[in-house]
Image (tube, rainbow, N blue to C red; front, side, top):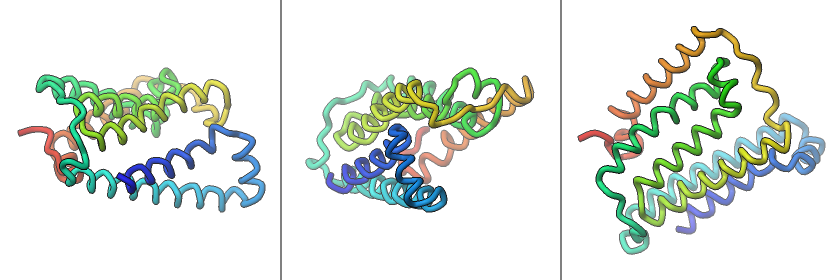
Length: 193
């Protein structure tokens, strides 16, 4: 559990910096924008690696990873449905479109839905720490965005219907890849029998 918690703490502490404009500005001033970005990225990556390794380690621990609740079998269908907008919003975070503009901060919305859906489907301690942590941070970050301009403007609704269609098609395509192949291959949990 130590590795998972250490990774979560490191990852979220690093990602707290943009929510603290004065601290972030002082670090950028001291290190320079390039070095700040490099350190931010490196520490984020180390945090992610610790999260992945710690989560995998806890999954193999049996009693060290107690089941806090047993999700009902039908919940998996709800989770599969919730993940459709999560993946579309993830794509929208990177493609200028009216979808992106309407949502405001689609990455945070995607992480919120992803974490909530996975909390519904997984009742073990490691999952509660992982997905609960990401859910809490995404909600905090979304609230803090309203108090700061750190994420900057996302641009106007570019491309109209064509860009929106591209976002939705790319999101659905990505979802299908995850559903039929990637989740089983990289996470080790096939989503379909």
